[in-house]
Length: 346
Ligand SMILES: *Cc1c(COP(=O)(O)O)cnc(C)c1O
Image 1 (tube, protein in one colour):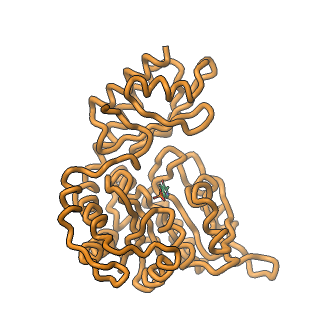
Image 2: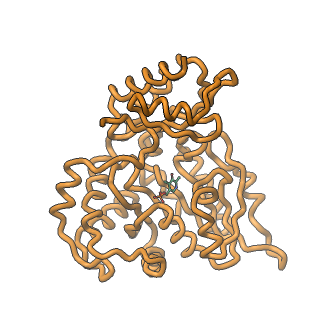
């Protein structure tokens, strides 16, 4: 069965070229730092992002957690978006495992946190207060529509961090999508940040894994904590081999996913009962829309009806959907999804 799978870019299975590279990968024990393929991946990721070093981690969640654990002491505070993955979707790991206090700020519809609100949230020295240690931003901001945060914004946040002696972490699960959409080099985009996490396993199509990037000292400590969390992997070169293809070949084709998402959102505008968030959904590989009040179908019924037509979609709220384009969705797939939705929404 050939489904058009628009549930997420995490569903991307490895390409035949990746499977071949995985089968042939030179490997060693990566806990001894002996795996040449992992080492190559880590060097390449650091070089591409313009940072000193990087670490291959099993998931984006572990990458973000490691960043927070390295940057913060127990009782320290992070400034973070209320709609961020770190705050909403990482099972409270920073609090549970790091004793780290979160200061959630409102995400604007363009994904940003207001600069004034960041400044105001920084704690003054007082026996009553936590110590503000870190600012986290998410780029692209998933829940706000997969919106990319501009170079100017990243630089402005970096400046606030510098002026206040704070650290700056970027949850860049889809930072290469941001770079492609903004037409800004990845190095420039992350230059203001002390650390960056990005996912190989999403639009970059690798089966498993994320990268944590930063200074040598930061990565050395993160490697130690990765072992503590049980994330020390042995012949991980099998996975890193796919990640290398992600970096070499997949980072340069993301614009195609963005063009298809745009095509999808244009088509959705012509389907009765769907209300697109005008500003949202069209800048990278995600399209969000709501069901109009007149629509009697539930989101679950729509999911089921779409599946019968060989299109997989997932709801993002009681009346809300998110569709995501990726490597395995071609133009015919977009057309098929639009036709199926047209049929279902009658
Ligand atoms: C997917 C994602 C992560 C981490 O995901 P894992 O599933 O743990 O790899 C982190 N941040 C954002 C914004 C994400 O979309």
